[in-house]
Amino acid sequence: MAESPHGLDRRDFLAAALASAGAMAIGTPAWASTTAARYPAVRKAAEAQREAAIKRIQDWIAHPSIAAENLNMKEGAEYMATLARDAGFDSATIVPTDGHPGVFATMDNGAKRTLALYFMYDVKQFDPAEWSSPPLEGRIVDKPGFGRAIVGRGAVNQKGPEATVLAALHAMRAAKVKLPVNLVLVAEGEEEIGSPHFHQVVQSPNVFAALKKAEGIFIPASWQDMNGSVAVNLGSKGVVELELIASGEKWGRGPKGDIHSSMKAMVDSPPWRLVQALNTLVTPDGNTAAIEGWFENVRPLTPREKELIAEIARNGDEATQKKLLGVSRWIDDLPYPQALERLASQPTVNIEGLVSGYTGPGGKTVLPGRAVAKLDLRLVPNQTRKEAVEKLRAHLDKKGFNDVELKVTGGYDPTETAEDSRIIRAELATYQRAGVKATLNPRLAGSWPGAVFTAPPVSLPAGHFGLGHGSGAHAPDEYYVVESTNPKVAGIVDAVMGYVDMFHQIATVK
Image 1 (cartoon, rainbow, N blue to C red):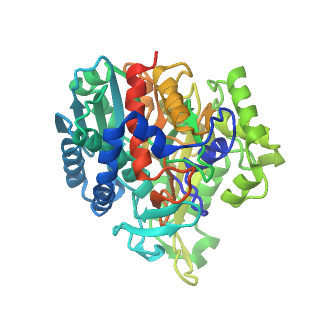
Image 2: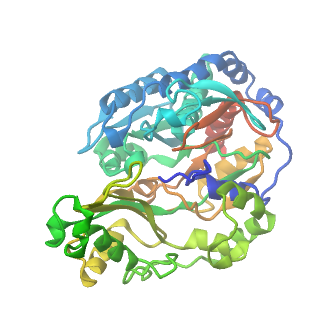
Image 3: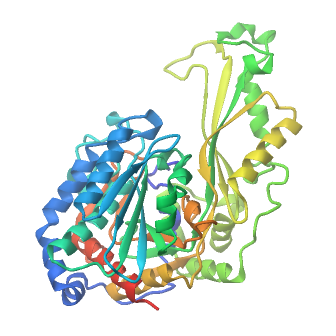
């Protein structure tokens, strides 16, 4: 889950680009008046519980679970289960996997329809030296253009939005208002390492049976831009996270460990071996995958998807997107519409990081015995993780790099959800009732493990939903707005009421 140097994470860019479009513009938000009129008792309870809701986020931030470091994973699962029980779920159990555990919770409200929720309790690593305030403190600061925000690791990805869903359940219970839907919650602790074992949670008998009863599932989101706009995603790219490793030991050439660089005149270099292998994976400009058979199963954009992207381009702000990303040109100097089509349609081979030898201050004249490249492969329909890994391995072997190790650390297939599915129609109806500009997005260029839900045997429509704003996922000073000074952007109480209305829309939309 790579983060741009400008604080715009992999999920933020297309969401921001699409949200700035006007494909489905609807009115001006009137948060308090509309929700108070529809749900007066719940709104009153949410306002009374506002400080408790904020503290719940801060307390959760103070308890990090970092899968990449195996930090507090058991404790994180137990904390997640406790939060679910406190919010009114009838039961919340720990689901063991071959890796870190998941959490499964249900709430039976005797309703005709069931809605599923996807949570993650893990967060990315952090370096406190890079933050303006301690990353586990959850300090509240001013964010110009938005309002007061909690700063902390996990604030927006995903503890802030998730805790806001829980706050909606607390408010409804305090108001003695029964939920109009039954709920199923599935949570994992490995999202930030590519969800390598989450399928084991979803496919466990009790979880699978509960999910099959649901109308759909969503991951909480808080992607409103400064104008209050949001995107409704009809899919997401898949991803494979992996390492390629070249070493003197496996190669049979070069040193087994670091040696003096003067020996390069007579000793092979594993780092150069890795560079040569990497060069075969893409075209000379680095922009198109050159792995043999890579595009065999890639599904082209449909006419409807092209129509949606064209509408996005017409109404979007290209200059703002370039500024946010810190770029001046798109690949091949493509016009904005074609660049957006490429973003949605093209699978990619990306280098996340390269590590070899000495990287500290000054120089250190060594010839390294080992080199590692961290890669992510973004996948589109109808590619699969399994296919991508097999083709990459076959490609390396055919090019003579059978000694280069391939270590997959996580990943999953792409997702697709029908535009006419009940969960998408419920999202659009909720945004419309809130007066929020919503834009249909054919595919998010980022990834989440929604494929475990959308693919057989679960076959459940899945997406993102929520009001509010946050940014900086994976970056220093990650934040989530709790008190909005922008009339077009929801604060925490309005975001709570958005989830309340979403529950009602799932229950009633035809």
